[in-house]
Image 1: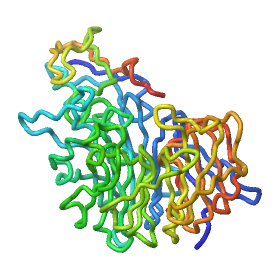
Image 2: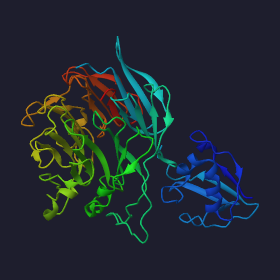
Image 3: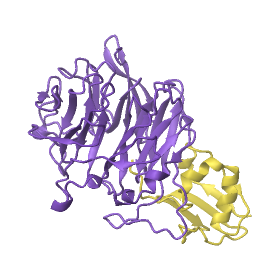
Image 4: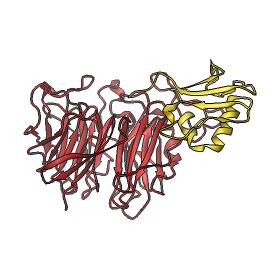
Length: 91
Length: 373
């Protein structure tokens, strides 16, 4: 099962521990994760299910290609990292 | 009417509670330190305090306190519905589609006195949301959102249009006026079931000549309503100051205002519709106090004349800009507070005749709101 890991920076807003989830695409894996941790959804995706503008996802170290459909394939032993993009902090 | 003794100051680096003690106004509490707090709303019906946060990466969120800001809990976030199949949103003037996704919470207003739990929320990119459970859940007003004229709204100083003002008529909570940058002033008489454009008379000098009086392109920076004379509303508009005496149906421009008719904030006296306060700035792409002097303009005769109030305010090399939600007035009409992009906060207890500096070292201030309002 692929593993999803989240940036430490999100943890102070909403708990997002690493978790092995089922799914063969990023969308499926995230859906499985959010079924367990529903509050995390809105911190990562927008209402239309797209990756937030200033978030980034890496799959086995490679940048996500499909930010809208999240159709990137994830291998059975894959690792999905959800992090903040360096853009968009506005802080 | 009692005087306010608590004020919530939303800043780019947190939410600060300012209270009136024996020796004056002091910052008494900080919350969300380091986070961008863009707006607060105190609900006089329940005592709830709602804070809007904007996390650059994680989006806009709402939190609620039921103990006057001591502890907080995240509540529901207004969410736009899925776009219809095959629907292509209209492009903004800068080529970006008007996204069906929350960009910013830009207005929070309690519903009517007897509508306990009802809260209205204005947002970028132009959706109006309603909660009937104190903010736990939100529903988009589809009649407004689906109005073809809504798609004509433009961003004003931002990429997307937004609703920044929500005026619920104290006599009839179903009569609501909203202010949009840029979409003018819209009115519903039935709690959001039907809407009409109500900004007749507003003038947009920045538009081509034939469109300057189009009510749907206007950029009111803020619209406020006199609680005791709700037929009267004031607007600090991008183009100047406007006033309506017919519940936002038509507007008259107030001219010959010095040092400037440009600004963002406006406050109206709770019992005297003729008295209003403004914080002028050099128009419109420059946006700093004229001559580096922070002043407040007050009219007591419906805009015929203005007094420029300066006592206690910096009059040399001060470049404080005051955003639209960063001026507030209490129920007594005597206590006002305003905060600036430079992190200065001033309070008056005599209607603006003299001001005291609460702090000059806060983070940039988005919003100033008295508790109980």
